[in-house]
Image (cartoon, rainbow, N blue to C red; front, side, top):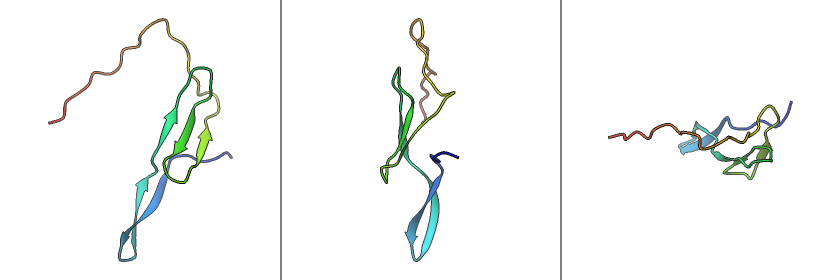
Length: 70
């Protein structure tokens, strides 16, 4: 089994108590390269193995419309 990415990490909230929070990081996507996830804390990273990949498109790809939360 390979490196695990994401998941949760225990964070101290005082008085000896801990809560789980989602692990934070970023995903680097670049054409011709494998996607890489990097942990914001701890400096860990993992290269995602196929079937993950980017494919060129013929033109612009429509993104989801932005919503305004009020």
